[in-house]
Image 1 (cartoon, rainbow over the protein chains, first blue to last red):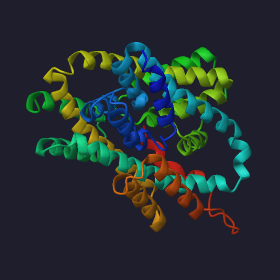
Image 2 (image 1 turned 45 degrees about the vertical axis):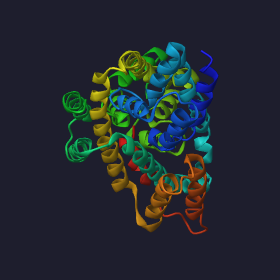
Image 3 (image 1 turned 180 degrees about the vertical axis):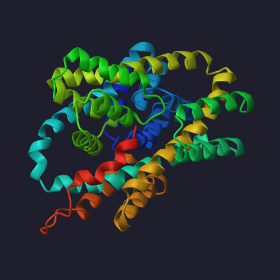
Image 4 (image 1 turned 90 degrees about the vertical axis):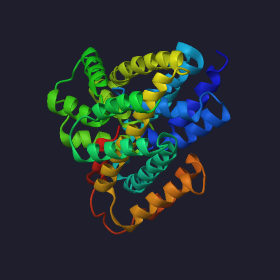
Amino acid sequence: MDQLPALAKVFAYLSFLTIGGGMAAFPEMRVLIVDVHRWLTAEQLTHVYSTGQMSPGPNMMMVAEVGQLVAGFPGALVCAIAFFLPTGILTFLVGRLWKRLENWPWRASIQKGLAPVAIGLAVGGLITFGRTAVTGWLTLIVAFATFVAVARTKINPVFFILGAGVIGLIAMR
Amino acid sequence: MRKPSVIEIFLTFLQIGAISFGGGVVAYLRDGLVRNKKWFDDVEFLELTSISNTLPGLNATNIAILAGDRLGGWPGASLALIGMCIPAFIFMTAAGIVYGQSHSRPLASAALRGVAAAATGLLAATWFKIGKKSLKGFYDAFFVMAAILGINYFKWGVPITLLAVGALAIFTYRPTTAPPEKPAQEEEQWISSLH
């Protein structure tokens, strides 16, 4: 219970780094959760983040699982609210201002400039993530096969992820 | 456009929040809001994704808030956000209960090692597709590389990298006195497969 204020602070802060998607914030999340607060190990965080990829809806709801693991149900609730409410209010306000910003010349500059930065941050986060997730030949093969399957087919990726879970059960104990 | 009731808004987003397995919530949102309900046309929907993209927060929840606001003011925005989040919240909290009980046991960890490897491939494919669609020219490639190096080589951390590379990128694409080539929205199709 005494972790709740720290959880709220960490996840409200992280939410403002999710430009273009949750992966951008992953390196900072790892520093805060694993190194600073020691709530989870690096491997546990990778597991929780991966579980988020199996969830419907916003995959960054994995923050609720972190909260659940650290402080039970109140932790889950605090993390979810801290992560989704502050940026939600910001989006609501900017959404209302948007029409008025139509003729503001910097609006297009911000959109054009942030697009490649968001992609770079996501790839940077993914490299950090992959260092813990891809640890040997078998995980490398699974990762590469999933990449090709998702890039080349229209099959829902959740099936590949579930299949990889079965491979893990059989071969990664 | 017919204005839906707040209950209908809530139930629509609850449904999208419950069925959108496999990432790519934005595609599920387009299906639900544009094709099925016909609450928005493609141009409006693209505008919503383009606003969502420029702001912090996830596209799934940002689009829910913006669409909810246009459909039903602040109550619509709040209920759209809550509806979008409830199924994932239940799913992830339940996953936390299970993982918390069994994390010392080898089975959950073994399965999740496989899942994490596949998630790496899935996320790489997602960003590969987005990059292929949206990146053009030397400057875009430069800013992608600068952000990757800032995070993984120079270890600046996310906030510094975002502020430094972001400011430089926005300044590079600063408004010119020449007439703009084309509206920004047209360039914003890269988001369509973001989660």
